[in-house]
Image 1: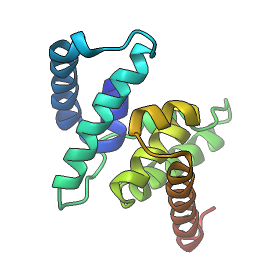
Image 2: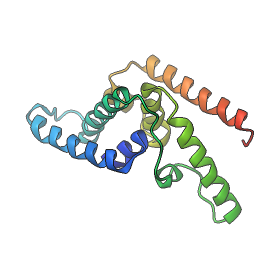
Image 3: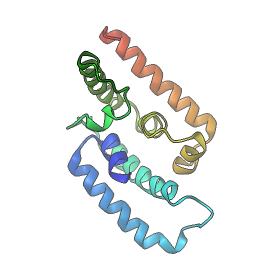
Length: 154
């Protein structure tokens, strides 16, 4: 789960691996502060997301995805090879457009739309209010939709 999130947000396999390692080091060192009333996965997502956000904010360059396999998992799968090819292309395009979002929009879009987490979990992970999450999600979707329309494919 941590690797999948990191890869989707950072778009680079080596950076994702490094971030996962750092995430588990943080989990190990902060284990005494873990609150049993919260889901462990939400706590782990929170740590990984914060590390990704720091990495995205510190990086001035746009991240380029090395692979679109993880993006394809969230797209509709079908046995029709023409539709699979279309979904592959759409996944690649969406991944590139996602990399152009602000770090907060990218995190909210990834957690909500790709990881399919509930709003309550996204609130716990990011520390944002529901209104901020919905606003960032709206802006992210609007940006991606506008770019898709401009691209002229979908």
